[in-house]
Length: 232
Image (cartoon, rainbow, N blue to C red; front, side):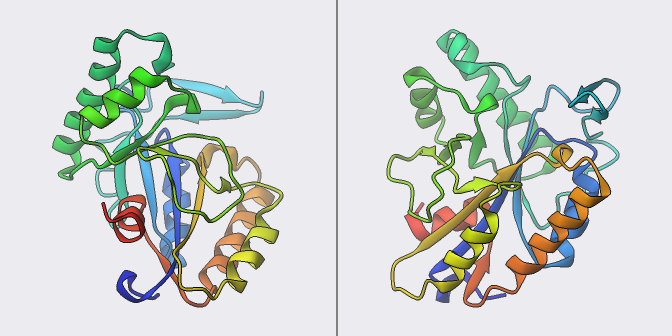
């Protein structure tokens, strides 16, 4: 793995919600030397409740107390306290959802919170203003660009693609071919609970293996990537 100081190609993952499938996902990322940012909701800190994904998979949130060190080597970021549609809230409610989540996560995991993923990927100008006022560097959407261009309107940050995108092979090939002087950022997002079958997990691990073999690429957290290519 190359250091950030001598590399123009940066690749980072971003996973939302903090559910129990993160345990297996982190093991795979660690096996291939890949790094991610995990966006957590401090108001959903245990696995006492669940919901059903695609009518067949039980999804439970991670138990913070049982998995405090799970994300070591990766980054913790905000996903709000309780995962609401922020654009439907008042300015005070928006601030509480984001600021309190940052405070709680920072205290529990002993880290600084630099950014967030927007619940449902939705926002309005009040949300963006609040993110700026709180000093967060970025808020990630779910609007895939399928490009490696650097973000132009921070704190708003659009990802390259979803981690199960059918265009992933094409994007990996394009990224591998780049040999320029400008920074390229390959930003991949998703939820670990979307890996439903063993075939899904096998395909994901295959993708990780292919990514890990990319020459001239630094694998980093969201914060590390943005600090390097955007000077944050």
